[in-house]
Length: 302
Image (cartoon, rainbow, N blue to C red; front, side, top):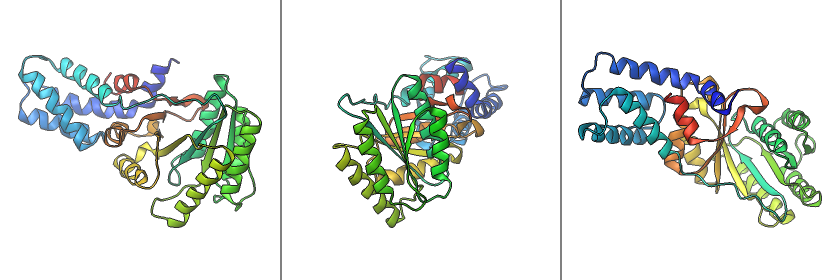
């Protein structure tokens, strides 16, 4: 299966919902008018693209249609696809360090898919020839350490872990120290699920930051928020709140294969202007894919 096929398959429900709604709008429509545009805007909002993105997108389509630059429904779909792709260009490449490990910290609420995402990222980067270590810093959830150890075996990556209830910051320090000593290319640190409003857990996260920095100056180099894409606009709210307490450098949006709310990717990116690093398109090891704006837009507006 090609990468684009993975995008199409993973985003099938979002595409189907959008296509059905747009088909209803255009059936019997010979000329687009105010009501038609309102219905299109509602369809885009229904796919969780967000009010601001949907309004801007429809305004641009309407302007070009009234100026005669686009004439058919096919033109409108093509323009929507192009504009969504352009909206998603708030991105920047990952800066891989060449003088030590690149330390990536994953944060997010319970159930967002951090541990699974860490394992799949390790698998993908190992396949590219990078040496990857994993740190099991979710010492709060009973099964978390065992879960990441299983993922480490699947990915062929060493896991630094302790026991349930151990000091997460101490584990992070040990992992960073080991990654430096063993000249790993990447250290992926999985953390416990936490709400931004839980002061104790946020204090623990700050302690993890400090511990990593002591073992590897300048680390963590990337801090990525993992959000569950199936929650739609709730994922947008969650991402917004986390940015107020954590200096994020990227986002990973998981579980898009089981939802018609894939447009949340667009809404999150447009509001926060943070790069989407990965999206989850299925359960298999290689179904967590590096984000590609053109493939994403093409998959939902094919």
